[in-house]
Length: 251
Image 1: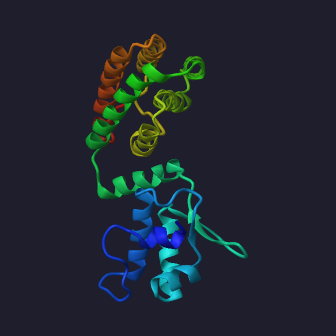
Image 2: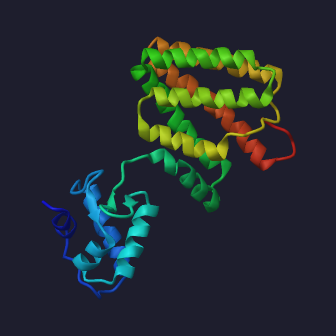
């Protein structure tokens, strides 16, 4: 089946130029639907501006607009020159983690909403890490713990190290959906400067992190999930307090 057939042979009636709605939006919808239905796969051609214009009976301006939209959505990669044109992009969801974070922030989501979602993601990630972590994952967690211990008196560096530890656990789950969600939410929730990170708090956090790494290495999925859930609940309380009382100096 060629690209034209893949795009036109869609569920529902075929494209008819001039019907209501944006013509370029219809092209975008067709490509997206073909992608979700696995009629188009990464690397396969979508066509050139000229191809799409002829295929749909629209102007090249409409086809160009559709291709730009597909590129902005991360669906298409466009190459210029001889042999160029649009192809289905190779997925890289991390590129859109920041974009999702921006949209959530613009929507006005509360700190409580973000942290509730983060709690669900990180608790499940810890459970899956205990089930799926590799020797390399365990070694990475140990390296991060040693690093955190060595910089515990440097508040900003320690905060960054803690974020990397949480990310490492999420990546040890080997679930890419959880990883992208974690990265996106952390653009909103993880502070660059932890105003209330006292030496006592830092030591307490490090102790929890060490226990988490131990539970994951022991393959104690239930234990890792519960401890991470308790840990993020504590973080949630501090982040919400920070947002609600920005000048009080909470963690």
